[in-house]
Structures are given as structure tokens and as C-alpha cells.
Image (cartoon, rainbow, N blue to C red; front, side):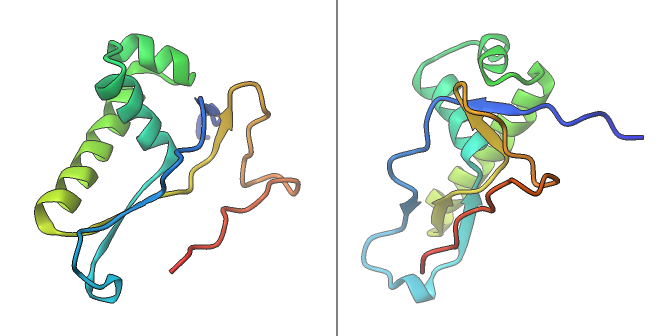
Length: 117
């Protein structure tokens, strides 16, 4: 039996959710998707300079989970920057500060917003 899901906490939805190389039409680009939680991990560790344990505590996850999330986020960002891919920030299952966590298994959960093209 799998462990129960532990809701991830973020401080806010990123204000900008899409980045792409200048001068290349969107239709010609590959795209990497960064989850909202991965963006929060980057913000806490790389922008605010928190230690992994402190950032993990703030996100309500274990330090190893935070480390895996941070590694995944850094890989996706580096791949997009160095290989000329677009980067979309969206999706995930999380709570914003004190709002309740949306888990996909519950009928009251709002689905991820549709992708904009």
C-alpha cells in the first residue's frame, strides 16, 4: 500500500508562466513543463537562498523529496535555456499557504487550467 499523499505548500502562483527564446515562432519550439511546486523549490533555494531542510519544511515535504524536486526543476530549466526550448510553469497538486490542498482523487478538486497556445 502506498504512503498517503502529503500536500505540498507554495507561497503563490508564479506571476509569469511562460518563457520562450526570442525570435523563434512558438510552433517551432519544443516545450518543457515545470510544475508549480518545482518553481517554488527554485524560488526558495536559488532565489531566497534557504537551506534545503528549511525550504522543505516550508513546503511541507521531506528534504529528500525537496532535493529530487529541485534537481528536476534545475534540469528542465537548464535544458530549456541551453537547447532553445520554451518553458511552461503550470500544474501540480499543492496548497497556497492556508488554502486546502487539491488532490485529484477528490470530486471537489478543480482540474489544472487548460493549456494556452
